Structures are given as C-alpha cells and as structure tokens.
Amino acid sequence: MKTAIIDVGGGLRGIYAAGVFDYCMDEKISFDLCIGISAGSANVAAFLAGQRGRNYRFFTAYPKRKEYMSLHNFLRKKSYLDLDYIYGTLSNSYGEDPLDYEAFSSNPSEFLVIACNAETGETRYFSKQDFHKNNYSVLKASSAIPFICHPYAVDGILYYDGALGDTIPIDKAFDLGCDRVVLVLTKPRDVVRTDTRDKILARGIARRYPKAAECLRTRAQRYNEGVARAIEFEKKGKVLIIAPESTDGVDTLTKDEDALQHLYQRGIHDGQAIRDFIRENHLI
Image (cartoon, rainbow, N blue to C red; front, side):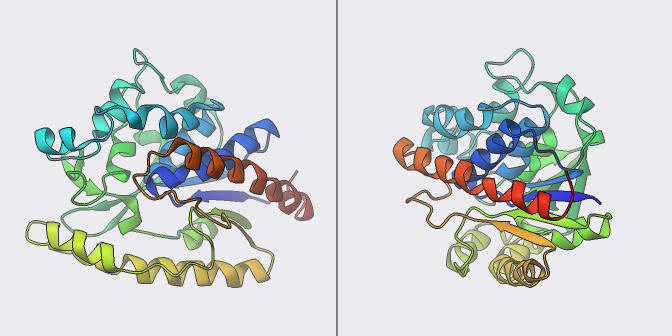
C-alpha cells in the first residue's frame, strides 16, 4: 500500500506543518509520495532532506530580516517576499542554511510541487527531476503569491503560487496510486475560506494575467470543495486531515514569534495522529 502526504501551504502559517514534519522525522515516518504547495513545497523539501528544525528557522528567524520580506523589498523590487533570497541566498550550498541536496535527491519518496501558469492558469506539477543543486526555482514558482510577488519564471514560463492551481490535490495522490493520504491544512478544518482578499489581489494582476486572476478569484471555492471532499474520504478511512484547532493569530505574513512557536508546537502534537493512521492501515 502507498501513502501520501500533502502540505497545502499558507505562508507563515506553514510553521504548523513544519511541526508535523519534524514529528515525522523524530518518529522516522516516511511517505511514498509528498506533495507541496507554496510554502508547503519548501517544508517537504527539508523533510525529504532529513533536516529537522530547518523549516522552523525559515518561519521564525529569517522573516525578521528585510531581505526576506519587507516594504523595502516591495518598493525596490516590487515583490514583498524576495524568493531569490529565501530559496537562493539562504538555501544554496554556499548559503547560510543550505538545503542538503544530496540527501534530498537520494530520498526514494516521490515529490510533486504545484504551481500555476500565470499566462494560461493551468496547473503544473513539478517533480524532483526539476530540482537541481543550487537551483530551486520550482520552490520560488510555487511560492509566488500574486501581487505580493512577481510571477516566477522556470524555463522561461511564468508561474504563480500553487494554491491557484490544484488547491487540495487529494485526487492527484489517488491517481498516482496512493491508497491513503495525510492532508495537512494550516487553517482549522471547519473554517470556510472567503474570497474577499483573493478578489482584491486578483484585481492587481487581472490586466496582465487575466487567467491567473480568475484562478485566484475561484481559489476559496475550490479550497472549500476540496476540504469537503477530503472529509468524505476521511469517513471512509482513506484520508487523515491534520489541522490546527486555532492558528494562534498567525496569518500568511505574521512575524509574531510567540504565536509562531505555539502553532509549531500544535503541529508536533497533532502530527501524532499520523502514526496511528499508518498503523491502522498496516503501512508500517
């Protein structure tokens, strides 16, 4: 039997999923397929590299720097998040906190990173073969929040945040032969996502990228439908939803370290349900 884990991202709320993955590393829990969206893609990369605690630093220490995220970046580069700094300057082999590329690439787990084609609105599923040492463009593409960031180019094609594409990709995991899926959300499972903010951001990109803007306008609906579908699969024992009871005040760009720490600890605690789920389904 094959099992998958999906990290849907959520900006700095992704520290919750970082706690889940650190728990999995502590318990030596692995997955046949890992799917990451936006910040979730970076969480998965460090998990596959076996770098416990690395994601925690990327959510707590580095965001305080203006090079990471700031109005300074937005005014100078027209991008609030400097994705080249996050997934290049910090993450390359010569950087301050490098991804262990050799461990990452040798991990036998499959890995998909989701991004949205800015021109066509189509979903792109990058694989581990699209990663190269000191070139983590696919992470940048998947994490390019519309209007907050410029779309990011991979092989000459511009991409926006993967959340505009396949928002809750459980069907993709099943299509690839997985029998069970662990779905990690960074909002409480009963929170109905609204489209107010998405529509505001969509207006900022609609003139140049109308297809991506339409994907952004419909993201909330697709997210809500995806969670509802996951709940139905959960009743059948095919999906385990890991989600925080509260986000502790953490939002997409929150820098409050105490709040982030609380949410991280929630992730470690809630991740314990994964071992029981795997045992019940005879996957370890």
